[in-house]
Image (cartoon, rainbow, N blue to C red; front, side, top):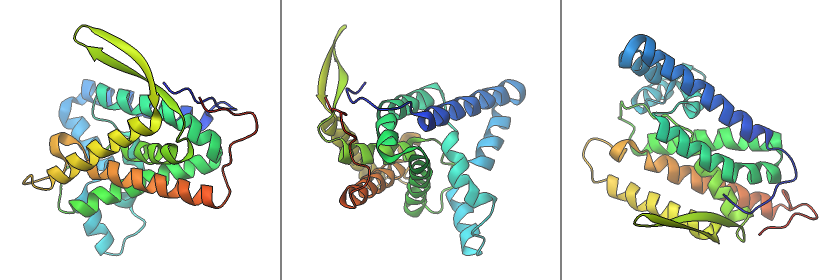
Length: 236
């Protein structure tokens, strides 16, 4: 958790989390009712399939079902750990970014960040037929904005020592810079893997593209004098 307070309830962040959970429960119901085949059809239809998207865009169909998947894919997840990790990161960091940007602006930022992230992955592997799903690209954009807007914030991190663990507070900039560095190294390493840049099922370049977009947008907002810290809001 972070030690960064907010002025108001993060309604957009909560709504995104709730929507992702509802969709995930629906995915589970598909598996229970029709098996893995039913789930695969659903994911292929609503997830981003790079090869299909590229073919659609080359045909001049900017507004189509395939382009809509750039948004719908953000609410699909591949398992309990996938959605659990994404929603935890969104809750820890999204509430502060929403508070600084404002609710409507954060919603637009989040969705556009997810679109940019997906397009970054498509650009790297345009021939892939593997559906890309998950909120991690949009969340990466949120992390990028957070590191710019709240460089002095601190987060509570668990350090595991064999059978024991210790909770310590570390600067958020260290945690997020380390996270981005891992994504960058893994992403560059995956370029040498034959067949897919989604090594182990992880779309690293979606994370990289989303993070860079989020940081860039936050820099622009800060340079323009927007999204200022409200009076009385301290950053621990």
